[in-house]
Length: 232
Image 1: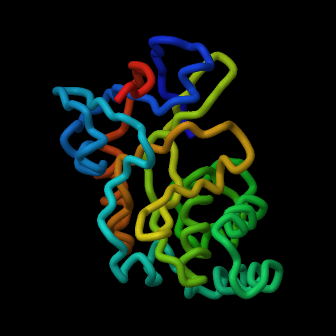
Image 2: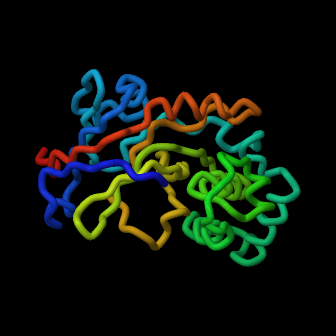
């Protein structure tokens, strides 16, 4: 997590009860808007996009087989991940829910910061990391139990004492009921989440996955303006 400055039109709690409209400052508005559903992008300027947050705005591109397979990044077939997966199935039963895998992941990764963007087997072995390690390990456990899952990177909006906070973040997207749904094992039972807004997903999970990460991070948000609740 890293802090992103937020400018809110109104910092009263009432607006948090309704879907928000936000302006997101970014170096790559075209690439960023391409990662979102077109009907959620209200407008796009030279250095920002305006998004309405009615439901998850991430692009719904279907669930190809690659999001169910083991990869270099999400190596759920590695012995260290297999052992953890077996522990989870032994503890949770033969068909754990997504929520149970989220809690299982949250309980087994010590939030002391990661060493970058580690692959799932490294996280399973070291049990230390930040949001990226939580997202990658959860993705591995979820895929390993048969659910299409992928790693997303973006900004999360949360409810804080003085209104709205924004953070650079990573989470997972799980294919549920024919849609990609955000699942966040890092912030489980912590700050109330208002919205996840993805810069994109890690589309290339091979040995050069860092290049896919760099492409996505080129869309990083440097400022958020809360324009108000969605009145549509």
